[in-house]
Length: 222
Image (tube, rainbow, N blue to C red):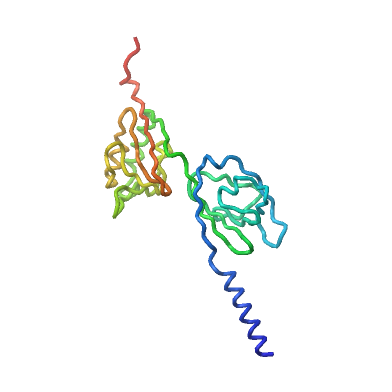
């Protein structure tokens, strides 16, 4: 009797330990252009509370790493609801149950590798004003063992297509090695096209800053 009780207690302890075990982590890389149209999921009818991935859920959910039978519990740390999440460029987390076991999908959505942003004189002046309001280390920090500077918290707006976590390697032909390099480059964007080479979520992309000339410097029409 005592032996049976010890066995039962041991099995219960093992079950609790298994339930508390960290989830298996799976990284999924997907191009944004492949995430065409999502299909709304329904809540699971089983014991698990979450969105059930059915066999006919469509390619959208398969692209981000889900499989038929999965039950999604949280997306980006928020409990799921009937309002689905559109996965934008960046890193997302999907917590789910697969065969009763916890799985964490680390979904990295990659945008286009070539992109262009257009800057007017007003845009440029706004960027300069914002840069002037930043203190040392508030824009970027240099990498210790590689070329480039990492964007810390980009508060210059989305006009330059830079994001927190980006590693800026070069602006034009100028290599970025210090925050001062980047500050100078951002405050002195040349007219015309300037290619910015950076790494985002493990991929190298090129952003072209297309700076329009000031109205006063444009050639008069004849």
